[in-house]
Image (cartoon, rainbow, N blue to C red):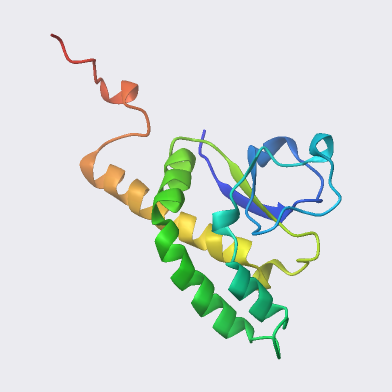
Length: 150
C-alpha cells in the first residue's frame, strides 16, 4: 500500500482512508470536548506561530498578504524539519496522514496545511527517489535484512 498526505478541516467528515488525522493548528479548536475530537494527534508547532497567526488575521494592524504569509510560514517550518521528515517517513512506509486545520479555513489553496503537505511531499519525493536509486524498498524485510548476529 502506498501512503499519502491528505488535508482537510478538522470538522470535515472522517473518511475511512484518512489514516492518522493530525491537527496542525497553533490553537486547539474552541469548545470541542475531548470526546468530540476528530484528530488522533495534535502538533501545534506545525501551525503558524502566534505572531504569524495574528499577522494574517490582522490582529495588530492590516492583515498581511498571502504571499508574505507563505514566505514567513515556510521560513518557520525550517525549524520543524525533524517533524516534517518524520511525517514523510511514515508516509513512505505506507501510512496515510491527513493534516487538519481550522474549520474557518475554507480555501485549501490559502491554508498552511497545504503548504505543510507540500513540504512533506517534497521530503517524501526525496525518500522515494533515494530508494529507487539504491534499489531499496519501503520495508527492511523485503530487502532481506536480518538482525545482526552476535
